[in-house]
Length: 83
Length: 83
Length: 153
Length: 153
Image (cartoon, rainbow over all chains, first blue to last red; front, side):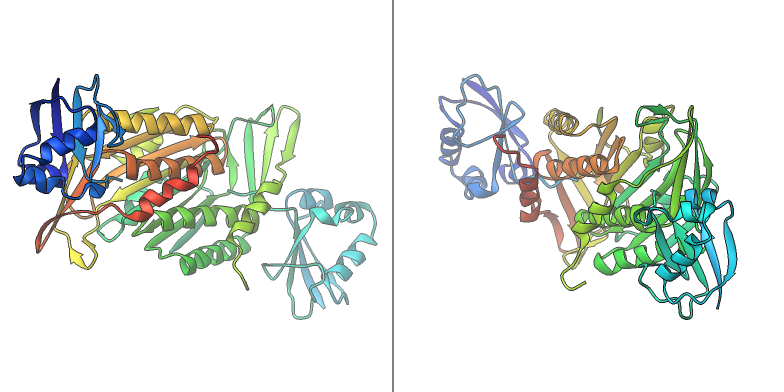
């Protein structure tokens, strides 16, 4: 499946891009993270501490165990600090 | 001693005056209330239900048991409803 | 740091702007505004008369504000309360609190309101089709003070 | 009933005036304004950059506002949040709530703030003398959500 993967805040800076379009067979968010980390380099660094990473699927907060079936957009970012 | 006695809200309306200056030997607020009530008429009506009456001595909230020694101004009024 | 008791209306936006003017240490600004409602308890309200106890009012509000400033790290605070004749939709009063953090600003504003409701000498009389009626104090207003009780205080 | 995400500043007083304009059913109006502080954690802050997630931001804020309106009898509510470059003293965001009674207005405003802090996709980066640093989420912000948990929810 084709996914748009978005990065925000320090994840965007570490990855060096706000988004990328990928082809993947990952079944869950955790699978996708493992696939991205396996590239090494900035991706491995960005996902080194998952406790500091949140994920949204099609703009709704989700867990790392969530399935990716039917999802178009995955976003990774640190805990929010608005307000 | 000479006291200025002030009335507010429905106590003022019932008594028919915002204040009166009186000479009294009352030792406590309760004594003063008894003395005023003994006049009968509007005063007796105003003090018929003391649960609905609050008192301030020299502009500080007080209890009915408080002594009047040194006090210049006594105010009676219903529970407050500002805000 | 300011208490005002006045007949005139106030400009909420201007008051809040003044509280933070020229400073950059405030992180959170909370305001509460009380307004005259056009109906209450099923009855239409044509107007409201707010009576107060000149002298004691200012003292009570200043004491309440001082207590709030002793309990929370406030950088600014303001209480304005009107008296006299008001009509539905008009502003009755406002409080504002400024602090580095939101929780202190919120708590202090609620504290000011809870104490003001039950400890500041104001009385509301509503003009209804059946005539004037003094607003009764609500038991919940007195009960609201309980949450601010401090051990030993 | 309104959520706005914008780069431009907003006029707090005008927004609050608009919420109550032409109506006489509101008894209590609460506002919270978040401001950029010129120092934090001992470091001077020259500027702040607020990043957000366009699309998700509006959805998240609308969902938070809808939840507040389901929980409290609100007659009006507003959330405005800015993004982009801000300097110390500037307004970052505001929420406002209107209700017949003060407790509902206060609680709903605090609820909006607590959820917005931890559930709306905004990230703050502060420019300090040592360079840019992303603001860390505070554990207390996540913990603040616990008080709004409802049995079975």
